[in-house]
Length: 101
Image 1 (cartoon, rainbow, N blue to C red):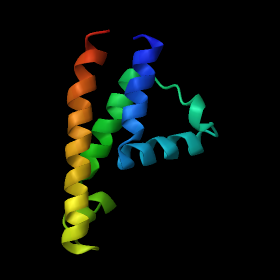
Image 2 (cartoon, rainbow, N blue to C red):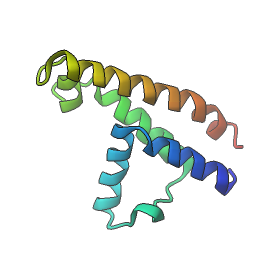
Image 3 (cartoon, rainbow, N blue to C red):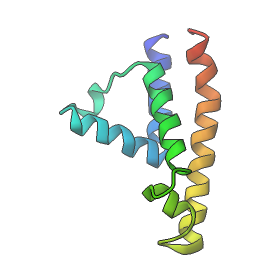
């Protein structure tokens, strides 16, 4: 994958709140700087799929938010929006990563 394509992929990933948060957690745990984040494109896809799965994982905070357990309908709608954004991001980038572009 060309560096410019990777940077676009990463930038679009970080425009989705829950994905940016997940990346920040990885960076903090590895003592990395925001702009030095250079994990493989496949890792980014895997991370996004993991974050998406947590919305459906019983007893996970994201699942509780999706059910509206803490913030009611407003929180539930926000989670549904995040899920839609994550799914769209994966749908766009996964074929490119798997195709080796």
